[in-house]
Image 1: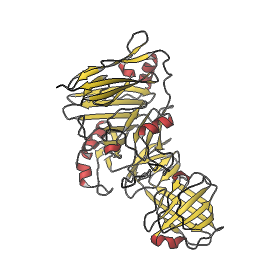
Image 2: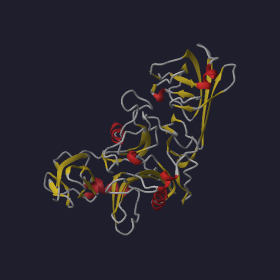
Image 3: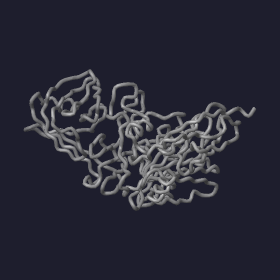
Image 4: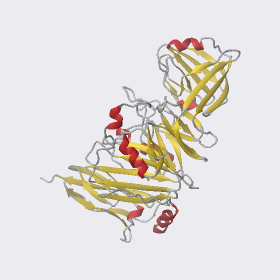
Length: 464
């Protein structure tokens, strides 16, 4: 297993970045082209977790993921899910939370901005917000625009407000099979369509036949050979001329990226870095000054000059870290070599998972259920068949720390470069295996090593 680790280290993209005075840095190879990095700066209460992915790796790649499989789902979370579940269900090596989503009285799994997964348009853009695209042609970042039309046979074009989203007042939206469950608002017009198109791209021209027209009140699923148009308020009259059996054409166009080069897109915002320099216009992308200037937990993604991707998470609102302002986050992404970077959903949503372990400490005290994310696919290590165990004290006093390691059956110690550590509860652990107490109570130490996941229970006792 140690030989495998050395081979991975040789294949991974080189990453040697200064962390600044008083900063500890650990870098660990996860797979060819994928490196995990942790920075701890105690002088500024800053903990950074990140992975760097080389888009040129022949065996490791990134793809967007819907937390619930489709945009909307039945059940308590309405299509949202945890990053750890996205990583697990995809059998991925790592994952990070993605775009913002409606977070009102009833949060849903609808990504607010643009999302494309393997060439399929899952969510249309939001206003002037940024998005990152990647694929066989490398990567690109910037704002995008959307336009869509329904053209009845022999009729005039009818504008579409968006794709796979809840229909707002005076809107007309298209729900494709990726939408999943359609919930119909009160006083809406619903047109159910039959089409042979199971997947709708960011440039789509689809012919369909109207199956039915009328009002609906019961949630229904969009079939793979169908689509649904939902109109509300003043837009209802735009569909009033349609009747069962009539043929229509639907045209969708997302501009901003070359779709011959890119097949995955994640939305976010605002932009942080453009052309290697800080470039933040929160107001233009719909963010208030407090969002930009106050410290919060943050997630971000950036691209280097060579096209590699950095997926970054910064803890906040807790003892281990205060979080960052957006200008501070932009400076961090520039230090990581990013020529373009953008903010992702943050706060309690900020989550980075590596080898099946949530390596950061979410500010809610547990993972938040989010709409989407990015997962990194690649080869897993062959699981070690012998006995493995975490070795360390089962208890420690508040204010103290303890060193942990992983032992093999023969009593030898696994190299720390091959272990990803995490801890939940009243302590946190760095990637050197040192556990640091935070509060009295139970702690669960986790280690991902040699294709296995191990746990070890610890108790933190009050110093009094």
